[in-house]
Length: 197
Ligand SMILES: [Zn+2]
Image 1 (spheres, protein in one colour):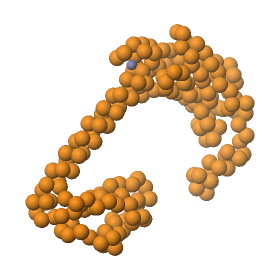
Image 2 (tube, rainbow, N blue to C red):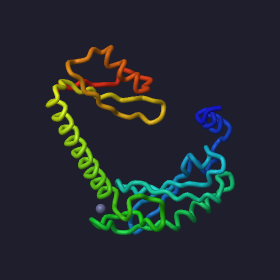
Image 3 (tube, rainbow, N blue to C red):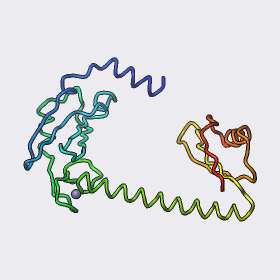
Image 4 (cartoon, helix red, strand yellow):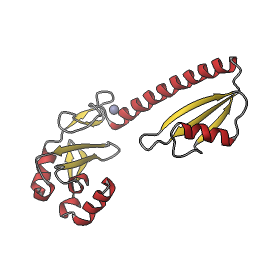
């Protein structure tokens, strides 16, 4: 049975208890938060109890995972106790409320959601610019050698998809490009673009 079949089977078999549907809300330092049980707690046997905590007003989510506590045995009192440990800190950049990383599972490291996303986007942009520069250098090298086109293709190999680029002298036909892509082990041969150098 595949993982997906297992998952479907678990969803059918385990009618989630009332605990799966409750949302506990609290006010912490004047900010509204809510806590809900994450579905993995009842979908995966032996997973333990995981709760998702939401800081309302765009503050994002954090989690607490208790591997010892099983969903079937958990009670409202357990949820309240998990909520007790949640603390907020002022964002280390702007002072807005942020999850205290010492009290919950979060990769925000004491930054508020907005500052974290700004930093993430800036890092992505920098990485994209670096990749663009690398591609332009590669294009220039190939153009100097008489290449006229670049083919960017996604290789769908069953696991993670990967992107590859080929250079050609003269524009290849669709049939030729598809053959190249299939040679790379891709199960899909029409996910490509051709760029004129
Ligand atoms: Zn901030």
